[in-house]
Amino acid sequence: MNPLAQSLNETIQKESPHVYEMLSELGKQIYFPKVGILSQSAEAKAKAKKFNATIGTALENGQPMHLKVIQDTLSAYNPKDIYEYAPPAGKPELRTAWRSKIIEENPSLQGKNLGNPIATNALTHGLSIVADLFAGPGDAVIIPDKNWENYELTFGIRRGAELVYYPLYTEDRLFNAAGLRDALLAQKGKGKAIVVLNFPNNPTGYTPGPEEGRAIVAAIKEAAEAGINVVAVTDDAYFGLFFEDSLHESLAGQLAGLHPRVLSVKIDGATKEEYVWGFRVGFITYVGQSDAALAALEQKTIGIIRGTISSGPHPSQTFVLHALQSPDFKVQKQEKFDIMKGRANRVKALLDTGKFDQVWDYYPFNSGYFMCLKLKTVDAETLRLHLLDKYGVGTIALGETDLRVAFSCIEEANIEELFETIYQGVLDLQNVAAK
Image (cartoon, rainbow, N blue to C red; front, side, top):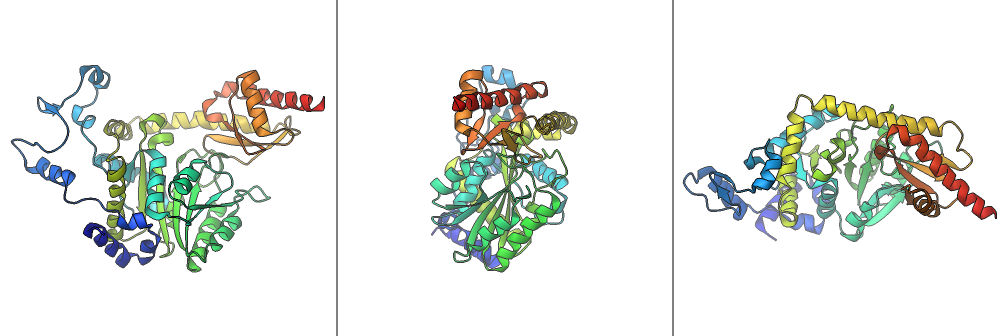
């Protein structure tokens, strides 16, 4: 094992032995090189005042070399803020700004030992880092039965982990904290579990209320007290889009420092929050560990980044930083939030008229981009294809009964027509079946 990796392991083992036990074999082996091109280039950047012939970029007239056809579209930005490599951990100013943002928006993080967010190539990359560091063959990854399908690729296919499911909702249409608890306690023989909490949920658009949140935290604490090491990952992809009286902050704060056997990891980003999907800017933040343990986890994380993508895109990090620093940022973000909330409220008002009750129910939703219909009379995939072929309407079929509708991309004025068309599609299929 590389001495740097060994040193990081010793630090984590001393500061938080249960977190060390959570590491996968790759997680134990990984490190960020202190001696190499990046470290020597950083030293040269500080000291080589005459000539710096270290890093693989090109300079011209004292600035990063660039093409006019590209710079003309980016003339508001200094070439050094878009063409040079960003550090593997991300643009330092952006990391600082994002840290301030998440503390402001999550009061439960205040006073907790919070690591400096590390920039990722959006949310999936952050989850992939968690998988690399903590998941191995046979490890349990606990998620609800209604989930984002990419978890299977990220944790199951890539890392060989076992996905363990529990029903998302209770019969009372609330979050099934008891189901989560049972799934966790079933891992006592393994002594380890990775829990992914995705709120607002994709595909249902559901966020638990405060009491449900406390039940989630209590379930994880009970598992830890039973001797299970829990990597508690909050996938906060749709953070901030809370339209009703649900939790309005991440559970990462409540999970931080909950128990020595619980590691709180917050995954979030500008992708959905700031409506910049193609920018691919996300963050991974470790919470509730000692300074030394946080530093060691950070080194392992940027080691993963260095060994996969090397570093994230600098231009998009600069664009996000510029937005966060703008005095107009909060006002403009509120304007978009109001539009999204209006669409969600219009969907709910329409579904609550009772007109469609004979053909579908809908799963509780109160946040995010999506909602799900639970079809009563027709197959979801059959309906999806029928809507696409006959009406030019796209939806997502999930299993036999569930149809996901992304109200995020439908203008409020068109929502009634959308659901009327889905309803007509159901009637079409019913009429065919009746003949």
